[in-house]
Length: 279
Image (cartoon, rainbow, N blue to C red):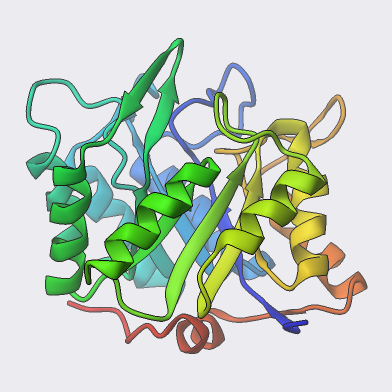
């Protein structure tokens, strides 16, 4: 079993609100400050979504992503992972606005295979988007983090690998318990892991109450983990987390108890194969 473990903090997401938990960050400063707190608590990576600074509604403005990234990099060496989700985009162009985030040159950008739920709808990303995003990431020296919400998404990824769109080592996230995705069970996690190609650096997230059992299983199996308000706003049943860093502290403590070594951002860069932050 791999001893070293990378903790990612997904500090804002698109759905949690301050009404649900007052500590949910909205402004670029709040998001960046939450990231830095998580870094001090043991997170090597921050996964970034942005929000309207006043209303908290999901946003896609490039300048908000850039401000968060710049603020984080001013304060620490944390790995910045920017979401390329088009779930809340308006208009007919679902490609170019998202490519702009990649051109900011974060360390990592997410790339979700297949579909994603939005309320009662399912949004399906086109093959055209996946190919354009993969090419743009390669051109800009950005590592793709492939998000798998169901088993068919792994098959789709393998097809793109065969066609030369991704380079080893692959970096993937098994997303357990996302609505209309694969359910968060031990059996499903083992099955998803078994389908990953060799030389994949993989991690696990669990939504809501599934967060703790899923990250525990990931730790036991040698994988990495993601925690944070995007996935879960509670420390335990009925108890809201005071902040994102408290969830990172919980994950770091659990990892150490299970014999896993929580790595720094510098060590995580070596594991994933990342260069130093770009200008």
